[in-house]
Length: 161
View (cartoon, rainbow, N blue to C red):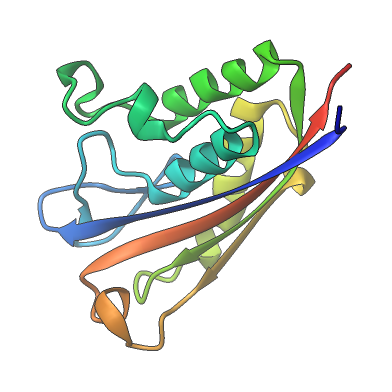
């Protein structure tokens, strides 16, 4: 049996008015927010998909389908905790996370440390095990036109046995 597994995740949501912008569990001041069935936290969703992918457990849509009213407006940090429990139940633990949020605006640098701390707390990690970077799309494509925000994540899982 292998002692490590790697998974990657991606998520994108459309920016709209009258929604909060939540990334990594942090509400970020901005005139637009992300549209989705839950709180549409693309960073947390990408991390969850990477965790699930590392163990070939499908994606978050399988566990939290957007057609189920139970998940309407759900806090993605609570969903992350449930995915973390699935990983632990299979005797795996997170070694580290590396992620990138792609957004033209707002500037995310002032919020990265808080996002890292929130995600680390839910996942029972040290903050230095959670890498978060922010970049723009140089005005290219839908993210560059500020139509949405996307995130990528890679997670290393280590066998806990």
